[in-house]
Length: 433
Image (cartoon, rainbow, N blue to C red; front, side, top):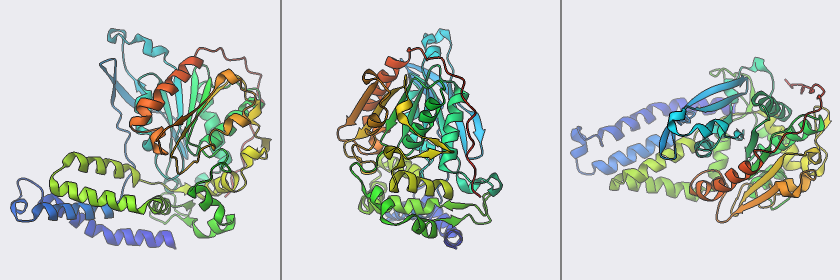
């Protein structure tokens, strides 16, 4: 019933939201007589703050239409390379010709960015993608909001997630492929490549793992503690709800995005309160640049998606409560996940010094598991002063992290791929309905 009550509340709030939006425009528009009244800036600011606190936030666009390379503007077109019920594989195609003087771009390495399925949309990695495009051909996993997937498509489990990653890798081809996983997907990506290695399949040239919960026993954070504080049945009974009838996924069991959003805000309530107050003050003072930065951040931060219940519960159990991957006890569709089988695929792990979501050592633990990777093909980076988001977005990402990621990929881009042994057919995960 909670999901249905949430929808009723949103519907009841909508008229006031529209009214607040209209009020903000009437008291701020230069050609409106209301904007000349005493106190108009404060009234307009109050209306806009009310509007932004109450409005629905739809999935943002990537909006990457061009990049600048060596002083030249290169057009970029977003394409769907492969579409699955729960995910689209997107490619950002760069268009250039020899006249640009950038013919070398056709030989750039290919990067698959595996985005998190943990509440936010893949557009959270917009800055990651835009930066990578200067030197790489870029694909990204664009996970679908579970409330938009018809229940007839069946369940989506953590095993299915791993199968999707493997299918995307095979679809792109491993000849010049490098895989980057950000946060949550570090675990299923490591599992996917481990299983491919065990089957004798050719592997990507490298895998870069950024701020992920590979071993949550290391430096546990408040996020880790929340996942272990209650037994699995508590999560199933208290945070799993059914999609209402007004969505295509009606009847599907999900972990709703609005609950995840409440969790995000509850981690730092004072910071968000201060941010909204500062936004109000910026509007009153006419600091439009700072106000726009606030809008841009919260347009992304407040846009959340529902996660399939099966996948969410699998992740809680496998990653956070039982730590099956670092303990060597994880079976996926009847196959044991053994990272020591990985050979010929370089490994870069990245952590933020101040990461309050994946603590220090959790991502670095991949090196202890991947014993088949030569020491010369491993590297770890701890980014001083960076929190969780700083390692893949913003100034630190662009100036400190990306140069090292680019160099690591370049150093392993030319290594020959060992011929693959014919792989046995992958076992398909049995969907739970």
